[in-house]
Image 1 (cartoon, rainbow, N blue to C red):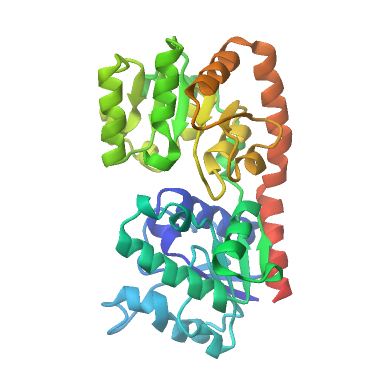
Image 2: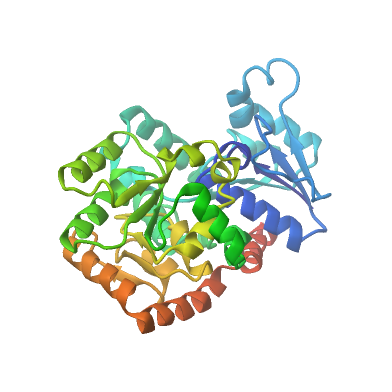
Length: 381
């Protein structure tokens, strides 16, 4: 079977959508090697190395006007390339499918990660919200099957777009297998020295935007007079400046480390590619992730795979991703978060229990299980 993918994110996105695309494609190619996988991408970069797979073939736009108008090629003209490569199933990995693809007879699946812009439109540019809504609605209406990455996302698709439940399948995502590998002590120490990380620290990973609620962690740290600092992996704009203003006004400058501002991280290829993240996770005391809303919450799973205790919010899909392993808090209550952070840092028995439960719960999200769930969708088409 020839399976095609919208691979723009796989080659051009360094955050959640990119990680999802790369991990899923690699998993399918590994566990279902009899199929041939074509990656239709406007541009090929070194962000996704497929050299080790003989059954993966990148395809770029060629000739005029496709090579010049790559956006139009991806959203429409790619249909001609799909037919030339005899694609049986086309999978839009991030909310989109080409216009009019149904007329080609090619079966389609689309992954919807979240509808956060529908829930919190005020946090998005109005034009972006308009474009997202148009693309997402079209994909949900016209794809043969919709893959939702959590039960929360499935319910949102039903509620916002009135899509029949039977058209939507929940297929959880996996994370990069590197998070399951225990890093040698010498390598962890080298990475600690490279980024000048403290001996012990809390960890936050994610874009620094309002919904992800980094400010709540800062308020909790002020309340509990935290002895451990917080290392932040991620960057942002206006909301980040709001957080930094709070930090400066409340004497937390020495306690909050923005790793993206550390010179060695700025110049490190292994930081930009996330290759050093598993080691950083394994050196942390706890992952703090009090997000108000997520489609899946991949840092929670990465932490569980890394044997790192997780404190997260009790909303959205977080209880799906964290299971019985995480500590859950009200994401509007810094007192609850402060108490949870103190407990995890000071109670060895609690930490060990959370780590053990986390390792067990993470088995629901292995690469093989997640790939099998998606392959079942393909086989149903």
